[in-house]
Image (cartoon, rainbow over all chains, first blue to last red; front, side, top):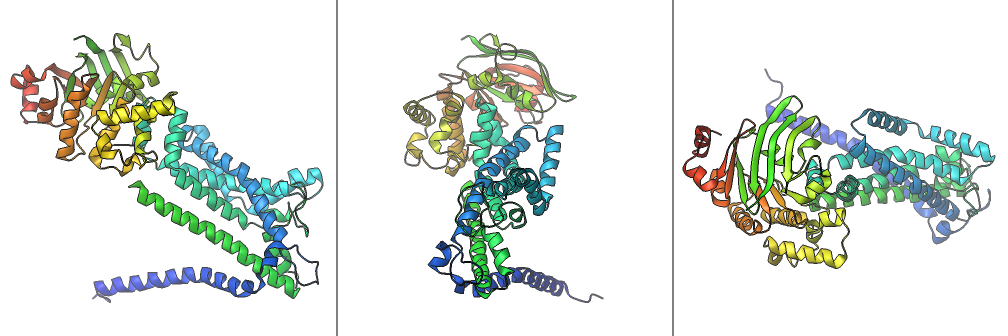
Length: 281
Length: 251
């Protein structure tokens, strides 16, 4: 005898999966709400533009950390994204099927799996140890390295789904290989490539471990890329553990800014990729 | 009329499998030749040997000669140059979705040559007019090529091939994905195009072959069974296989 009717089973599975889905989404909302509750009170114009005050003194802001995060992320993107895209193009259009291709692909996948702290230790060893002081450049090297596999994978995947009809159509026009790759395949895949680059940017925006070994922190405005530099991530780390009430509340405020940046990037990617689908048909 | 395109002892393979067996044929300039035969008979392989698209398939191989105005396209020409002189239109319309209507028409010129901006827009207009699309799309030239209807897309693809000013145009079942009205437009277009180019068109539709072509080539199991004037071939085929195919008894 059946314990449940067919329809009953259907309803049960539906309820279960809906329940599990809600359970999976709760943490995200919980985190966001908690950060808003604790962080909103710290927000003010001065909070965004001022320098931090020394330990024990209330007031001041996180302006240098916002600028520092932006500078380091931008510098990491400037070299990490192009190399990632070039690697993705190679894997999808050139050597992807061959022996070298499979070596490169394995390397990219392994690189994506390396814990972020290792990137930090690596940049520490080759740069910080050499110049004998903490530097923002080393942070940009570590974060840029992290971006390469993410961007390469996204580029390869989005170029591979471009239909072979497009490659054939371009070939039949006598268009040379580099132009077929760049102006046809890469151009059709540009939405996916851009999404990959933005998601990689969002990903490095949250990384803290590599920064502790490289840019470390500073209470002042950035003076040069070869100097230590404040970032939102390290500021949150330092302030949250300080035990000083004003700094703890500023750590919440900085968290709110950081989460907002990452959420905005994710939403932009979602909206942009939805547009791409409606255009494509 | 002179022989524009000549094929001598052409053989083609996919790996171990032979797809074309010793095909020899001549095609006159300014004519339309229908290439017919049952599925898998080597029609597509045949026309892909004429713009050197067969050889790009992994493990594919070609032997024999293909002469365009007497010049062997395999030994005396670069593959890219061959494809600029021998255009191709595919079964499914395949405009580039990342490019506007205008940019689609001049895609080949833009990406394979050096032309000025004015020259390109002139070429775009001229070729859109040639395929009868200008009046329909002149207000949406900046829209994506993929936003047009299926029939318009296919004529856009023909315009794109024409813009290269090819000597020969190969068409692989260009109307099989189109509605009857669009099919008629493309068929009428062929009669205009043959004034300045030579056309080989694969079709699964025997009555289309009868309507549009001057010559017909019938392929079976990789061999060219019969090549002749369409009118006489449809009235009195020389080979019993041809007769059985065009009367619909197999294929």
